Length: 576
Image (tube, rainbow, N blue to C red; front, side, top):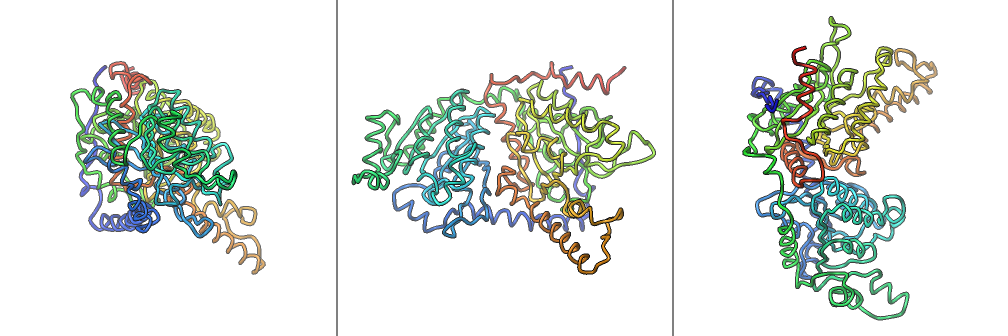
């Protein structure tokens, strides 16, 4: 029973895709991912070299330079929220790349941490619309994973011309401090380094941290010198009001005074090194991370750009999992869904992915039906699998390429609403960490049911192919103009002017929906956490899964001898 029946899956790319198709698919993806890389570089540049020079002339580092010096040498960071506010223009014709704050998973002294760093090249680290929500989202990721949280604070407070969009509301700026409190209440270590401005809300953010450092250029104040001068006619500097002399030696609001950025970052690394080490190696046992037999970079050739074209979902898993080994659970039922266990980075995780193409129709054996849709047996299967992963403490990865639920008289008679509700209940109440990836289509209630962002996965990633919407543009246009169409979806009016108006309206609706499905739109408004290259997917997932095993004791992690998975196998696929 302790044996986990992992078996090899996958085939060489040459046996799956002919060279002409492979070239076409690589070309289509390259155009999208070139744009992704260019936009990522644009965001990383902040407000540009002039503002970087201003930071350096003050003897300080930029946020991304601080992050680069904080992390373990030779390791990469995994940024989330890169494209929040991307393309939006605020008063004064100003932009806020990454909403003026860098949020990233980073390895520090061998431990994964969440790093939240104000971008001091963007309005001196001010909080823009969505900056508070982005910070809170990062804090929630840290809370769900129980990983140390590091704040690199250099914040001039709210971007005042847009204060009405970031100050009030349930997730306004003040909610950051509630998240500070919840992290503290749950025993998640918080370390803050204050490098410069720390005004108003920015002043509160470090205070609940377990350790607070200040450089000689740093100050923390409820109100800065300009406001004090206006309100009380007192001429005094912000350093005089709340610099390290005040907060380290008098108020006790900070713990340690250091000369500069480099020293502060070294102090944070020293503190993280004092925390318990990662439990990931314990759960790996004698195994290490082993690359798949088929390169993850092949995903870009394997998955067609056209969302209407099928591919073999097993081949996707074969390019993500260690040694391309997988234990498929309950393969005999709900063939439109594939679920099972594999290792990634040497650690067990559960995987659910939509099969593509056509599958057997169990109700009508002589027929086939399209996959990429949730039917009764598939819903029941992945709901049971999700519950088992939760019971066994196995982190769960949802790989979405879904058109939605089955519809029609037969679907309703089969009780799809009830089965879907069961799956939604399962995913809403799971406590095991879950991660969601939008490979291509993420449509309708299927997006919800497979742990879309409204159902609180720890992180949701999107590829450049991702299309997030209720339904496709043409289908939605037909639904929107349904009262003006006949049973064959043809316009009923015979008046030429009215027909032209309806046709234009349908075209405009379809075009607008297609634009809205752009993953950069979702990322801009925080409907997805990050857009990544397909070739990066394994690295992101390996890092996220390792984070779930880092801290011991806060959730159940069963050994494989007592997994519920074995019971499912015996009940569904074993001898009767």
